[in-house]
Length: 162
Image 1 (spheres, rainbow, N blue to C red):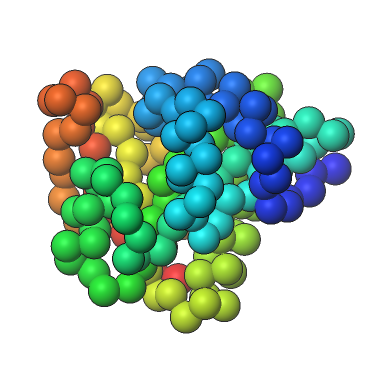
Image 2: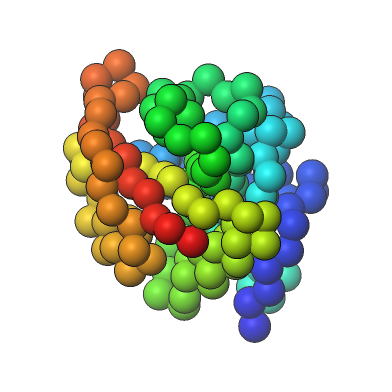
């Protein structure tokens, strides 16, 4: 059975391990960075399977002090949005619908807060076809692309209506 709950400080080491395992598709994060992101997030949840943190999703609303090229791209264009900074599902839990459960909850959260737009990005160079397929399923559409990480990654900037 999978449950979804707000992350607590005791989850942070598991969150960091999940992030490290997928760092090629996301970005590096240490305990200090996670603490900063948790402090400005409006949504930090974990999925728990048999007592183990299997996944996490971290998102923030517009208007927070976040130095991030992708977040800033959306902030320059939209007055109200929810930005998915990262969603990571442990590889051993892939295919169990955990990511979908988390996104369904995120969309519900956004609607309950009157937020009509969810934004995110995923890598297109190097390609991340699993993320593309996942986001397509939730109605995300590409608004633009940009190079980030000193020109080492290209991302697709995405948005979906809630």
